[in-house]
Length: 177
Image (cartoon, rainbow, N blue to C red):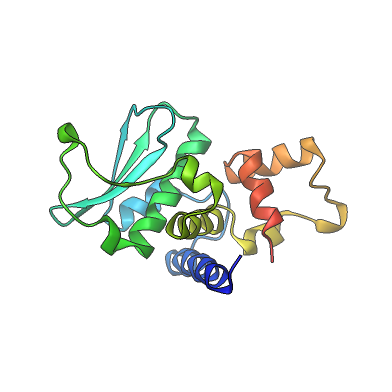
C-alpha cells in the first residue's frame, strides 16, 4: 500500500472524528440517520439488486443517499456511513443530474469497494468505519487486557453495542492504531 493511500485514509478517519466531535456524539451506537439528516442530506431506502448496497449523488443541488432496503439493518448503517463519506470527501465526483429510469453513474458500495483497490472507495470505507466505530469509543468500551478478537461471544456483544456486523468490527479493530 502506498503512503498516499494511507494518508488519504487517515484524512478520511480524521474527518469522521471531527464530525462526531462537532455534533457532540459521545456514545454508541452512533445515530447515523440523525447525523445524515442534520447535514441536510436526504436518505432514500429502495430495493436494489443484492450486490448494490447504496449510492451517493447530488441532484439539483440536493445531496441524496440511497440505501438498499433489502439489506440487514447493520449493513444499511454501514452503507449510510460509507455514502456520507462520499458526500464529505468526494462531492465533486458525485455531483450531477441523476435520472433513475435511464440509468446513471454513481459511486457504489459493492464488490469493488470491498476489494480495497479503489482509492475513493477505500477512503469512504475508512470514513464509515471511524464514524460508526470511532477510536475514542473503542477505548471506552473495550478492555483490551481482557479482550480476545477471536472470542465470538465478545465480538458479538461489542458489534451489537455499535450496531455493526461482527466483520465490520473485526476490520476496524484490525486497522486500529
